Image (cartoon, rainbow over the protein chains, first blue to last red):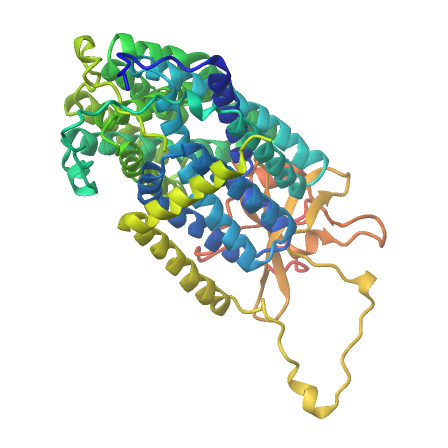
Length: 417
Length: 179
């Protein structure tokens, strides 16, 4: 078989299907999270039981990151994996809506957590296989744009649904979005995924490096530290700030918080493709530092600004961080491991670091806010965010391949059997 | 429809084969399943009251008390409205004192889609059950602004701040608060 020098670009249909897949994924994922606690309270659960269920979700999510990475790498047909994950999430939404007893909810939470891990990784792998390496940053930016629009729309829709109909109806809506996502997956054409790499007939393909070898890659370890610290600083900021808005802003609080959640998504939708393009043109590090820099600024503003009505404006900075984080995380990991057959395994390891950071964030910020007040919590988060920036600025190397080497580092696509 | 059946079968077969060949995801799945199993057994033990208790007096042939259903309603999870109809929050828990009297309800309120929700304690006597047939809510002798300035409910604190109905001082004998 003749080796093509460059893989043919994917036809528009698959790329559009990928756009809509990202959109619908963001839609159905909006219903999960803190809203589950509101729903379970309204069906009579005690706060202790709700706390248990949320903890199980967190633990399952973190424990599934690396195994999901290995799984998605091992299966050649990423479409099937993505479809199975979406279907599982739809099932878990229906379980939550229809059967709010202890074991079904624990099962649904664990199922959702594990499936979300698998889904995110398979979408990243599918995106990588649909475009040229040089266009991957832009593709990720487009993914992030569609996710941001999906988040914004779903937040508004589900908030209205929960208010006007019932909390349970939100999970029915979630299941409907999952169905739409399945339709989008079915429109991805596997024929358009890159053809198998041409391998030298005589040499055997070298075995992909094992997990231990991955962890020996200094760039990956440092990047894990950077994104883990970033999420440590970032994850608790919105909940703590929103709690302060509820406390101080009176009747406008709910609308302010809604605006503070939707506004950053619109900023991300605007900026994400630009972040991808900039990462390709100027390199990953400048964009990373810019995105990481927005975080301590936002945190200090939260600590010092007293008027809760400015919450919405300050939250717009969240959009910058989210755009950079959402685009650069899969991009840098692809730089480091793309083509080795261990892309999603590496993504899983990074995902574990991110999840750990998020868990630490809510724990630490909650404690500091309780005993020292909200401003102290924000200052602590600002300090941690600055550490992330320093780490990225000093130890994190530039991972973008020099343009001359673009052909050499071209991804080795997964073989379709 | 989108996915042809044989491709699904191929994909599933590959997935199972990959799982069986690679130890890592299998180990991960085993860990997750074991953890869920352990938690699934441990949690019901840790949470009394989820099981129905057998009445201890069954052997005495003592009659069970009967209460008309429409005079009862579950408390936890019930929405709270102010007398004027404004949304206050939802009941998340009840605090009882050593005299077996309910003293306060724990109320979760505010936020959007669960973000920014606050938890405060509200005095039991500010709650009213509405007249029969007027809906599945509790009425509270409070305005939503009162919750906003209340300190957060902290289960571990030595003293719990409780929101009281307006117009009654904390030293009112009816409410039973010390100074």
